[in-house]
Image (cartoon, rainbow, N blue to C red; front, top):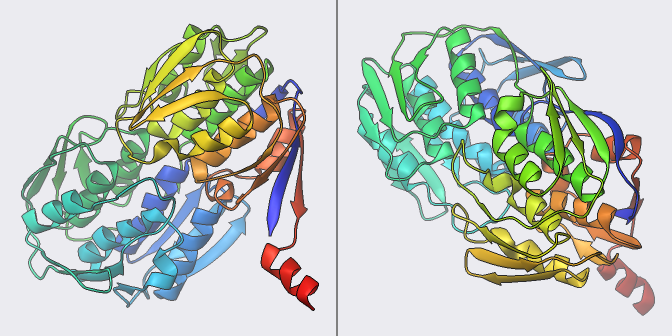
Length: 431
């Protein structure tokens, strides 16, 4: 087992380059199944979610080449299986995108319910509603397998009762080869949905309106292989921006699309940071204690839920009282207990938190409860006085490429250490 050991109190300074978007790549990789051809995808982040998805594709019959560190060539011509078992899906939530892709390819799918971070219940009722509107028959089996039969998919109108990124993506994947016109209303508008639509169109699909709340898809008979480059990761960029501000540093975050970061930038400025925008970079400077502010997570273009733990950690150091409201996930505040160990004054009531800022946090043994909570723990540890040990770091590595190396390059004192499992220690003692 491994943990991060962080000695806090160091300003982050310098430059950091953002990798490809996790939330885009985990949708685009399953979409290659629809091509029945070879797709060359660039700007692939080296994260465990990508490793898990590639393993699933290989198990299904895809051939995957790695020409270089950031590129994958995926040949899905020999994919024959439409079944994905639990031992493969339990590693990542995005495994449910395989359902839409397999329906589009084989007119049927049998996929185990996904794993990944636990942030509360993850119902797929909107996904099912969309599949059924296209003519599919969906059965939830007792062993948590989703079984879909769709012998005659047809385009149709799909109204999502709630704005759901996952359902929007899954319906898009299922609809691109369905005859007729599919109209998704109340669609999610996140940048990675636009990226998926651009990828599908590069393969020969006819998807219009991505980035708005109405997406129109005219089904095509076949798709083909293509070359495509993933967009930069909005959340990774935002994490380094907040880390710079929390450590009162000065960091140039490169390889970004500044427009995707507007909601994060606005709140950093409100808290007292200086943010300079360039064509493909943002520079964040902070030389004083932040001021308090309130945030409420919302679907894009609102403040992203995936940045809430990181920004809440930053607000733990602010002057005055901040209120953070979570409108997406039920269990997003599980990390608050870890911050309290470090001396933070944060109190959670349901889906909101009241934060009374303190001057400093103190190093402590903490853990990463999930991916974004893990990023928050890194920010807390780097801005704290003393040494912190972060366990469960596998969550962090689901979404952040080379995080230790990138933070060290900015001046952080962080190292990865192996530590023995407690059960093994107990066995040695007993022996």
